[in-house]
Length: 182
Image (cartoon, rainbow, N blue to C red; front, side):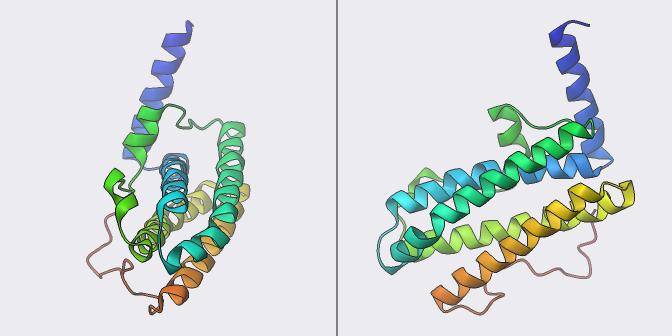
């Protein structure tokens, strides 16, 4: 099979998996979210002003390193399990559920930090779904890694909310009883 044909088979499988959904497909969204979140963290690190810039200076290096490590580890786990992983900018852009805005770099630092906190929160939705699917599919190494990432993100949300003087749940997604769309 030619390389283009192999890639087209991969794309078809990914499309089917996203409509099923599978742990691998849901984890593809996690990877795309991590990819974009790293870009947003870097933007805030470079441009935030005010007191939040001090918080970001302290935390963003760890955030970038940790997210990159999880990104690499999760990719490896998917590949050894025969799952498709997003590898192109177009795929990352298609699969991410985070929103970016180049003008955000001019927002007050506290707003940039809060946006990153809300991004962590958005990522938790995908982590929880991928964890549940991974358990059903018996992908326990993936599940353990995703649980660790979930815990790390929740810790970052708490630190950021505390710095901003917010209640833990301020601005975060709260499930309604009608939200069972998965």
